[in-house]
Image (cartoon, rainbow, N blue to C red; front, side, top):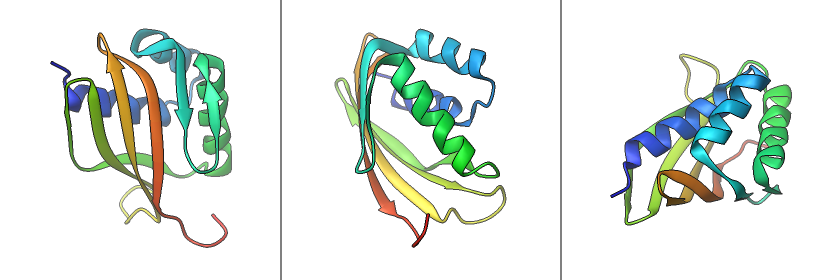
Amino acid sequence: MTDVNAIASRYIDLWNERTPSRRREILSQHWASDAKYVDPLMSVDGHDGVDALISGVQQRFPDFKFKLLGQPNGFGDHVRFSWGLGPDGADSPIKGTDYAVVSNGRIRSITGFLDQVPPGA
């Protein structure tokens, strides 16, 4: 059975990791090499694509961090969790919900939905 809390926590940790070599290490440990990521704004494949996407988001929002919102849930190899992106200690102006497909504890794909995005973000 998939540990939904571990999957969601590692996912958030990856998005918050600012050191490229550490981010690549997390990807190699917890993501399939051919993993896919898609949301309304981006679609990328593999570790290189996911790493570049995260780096770009960090550059665009240098003072923001991701945090889990609510409790992750799922069944079988499917995990759903919500997140917020914003400054520490404040309500997150950007919020979303992601769905992961997991195999042997490794993320195979993420489908992301943006639940709240302020104008100009």
